[in-house]
Image 1 (cartoon, helix red, strand yellow):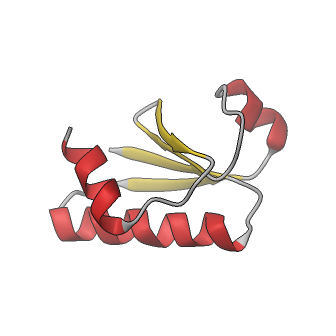
Image 2: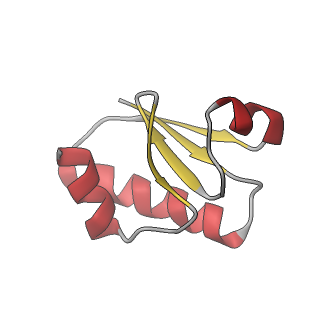
Image 3: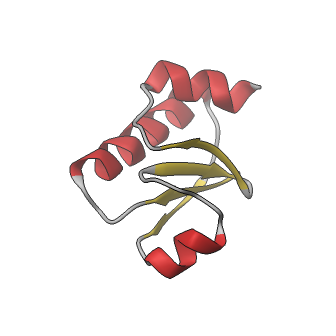
Length: 77
């Protein structure tokens, strides 16, 4: 699984990364994490607000910081 955290590095972006890593650990999912902080690159992914969470090429959350439980639900869908 490839997970991208899209955002400028703000506190919300760091919290999103922390929550996503914790969710993967709790589910036993091995994932490769990548931070995307280049705004031009973020625009290529079609997001309109940060932070955003992308899993295997699909944006599953943007403009907010979902909880660990919410991310776990998104990952098992």
